[in-house]
Image (cartoon, rainbow, N blue to C red; front, side, top):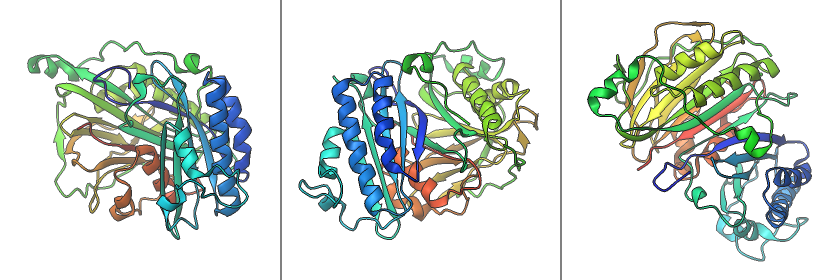
Length: 405
């Protein structure tokens, strides 16, 4: 989301979860809007939306939580609000969005007004299961670089009692303009690092992260893809503009796990790797001296070709409305011990998604659990999956990606 023709990607920083008192998000939203330069009027609109949605959760929902986070590209920063609960859900979402409909005890502006205030607003609700809502606020005038929904988004949640999370995710674009004969050299030495903006300097925020110690169990799951995985001995980047997405689970939980996860994110963003194998090799060197991490990296090409390489127990799967195909990862701990890396080639279905998540989520979700969500924004899908499969016994993260078609 940087220029005409660029893939719509944004980075995000999960700032704070509000679980027991969602109404406390109102003051935090005001401070966050001022901190990133959202503007006085836009910050007031953000606070109004947060107050309405938080009041709904406090009054009517079960186990409701509010997440505030910064979203940004190279030019601008905004605020994203995610609200999730475990019930009772809405039987008539379109009706709830009509003007004049507001639940008792709220500010009375209604969900329809929240949708008009936000630059992006989406809601998914299912009776008996709960509701997920997403609202995104950018400065005014609306920058042209933020049109379109991002292709990839994730969510992180620290273990109960911690303020920082040892799980992390990141995505970045990569354009390959070299002829095919030159692309074969991509699997060699590390390319020169990309020069990328300092997000903390742009938004005047501190890097967010944070995981204490339970041993990392390397993944030995077989692939159960409907179409067999193809190991690629010398994987190369395809032509045109693709993007890479990374999911990382720092060993254990708490601040030291966060250090490992953030080191992986920094290496991924600045290392300039073209393929998943190269990216993991760069992170392996960067994580020496840390606890280490489980890491998975995928490269998604414009035509849906997907290259995947994983080390440790990051779950990765391709999901459609009726199928789920698990991708193969290898045993090891990035930063400590890895066996020979292998990249596997897959194809991301036209209407499918790539799902990656840490072991803070159970693997027992099914494709049908996400069937009604596949057309929704990736951040909303990731949040719904976290609600469905997340545990409170560990840090948790989920990342959703789709191809640019």
